[in-house]
Image (cartoon, rainbow, N blue to C red; front, side, top):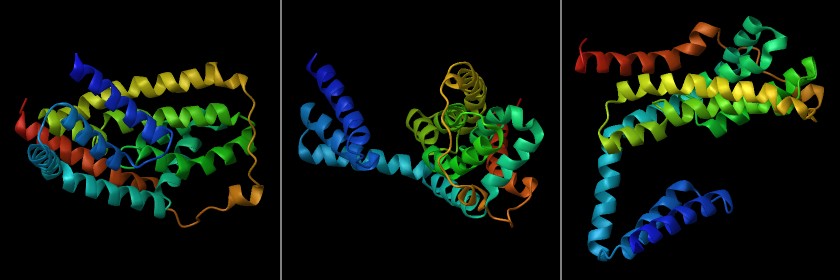
Length: 246
């Protein structure tokens, strides 16, 4: 019973420290791991050794993938590729269905990019859509967040699903496939909720027109913009097909 209470207190500490005081999750998890070890009766030497070995084994299996994913995310942000994807989807769906376009953009961009960074990158696009269509920022923001979080939580090479797969020894390719199967309806449900409920709230952009229209003019075309997302997914899928032939 004591260990369950200790675990609950540790989880509460992690949530409180990261949400309330904005302490970096890495530092919070280190402190929480040490705390649960002490409450579990581990001596200091064993606790440090276990923590180091666990972190090292996880990093050994997914560290390179996480580093490459960070590089890809920076590429999408700095080159304007994320905006290029968004603009192409907007042209495809039209202004009236722009919440769906921004939802799909978030879904794609968050595969290699952290969802918080993706939200910052694409929020300026939401402001532009709001100016052009009058669609509430509540609808656009919720649609974007739903798409971003769906792949951020379920689809490798995002670090969270990668780490979970490494800890339980799951095949990353299979995690990717089933992650997409789960993430697609989750993202669309979020988009549906945004249209059904969030449309009741009229929130207008406070950004000046000059800020909204100040975009890169040398962004890559859609095919080049999608390559950094498609290639890692294909490589991971091919490895799984080789390891688990049909």
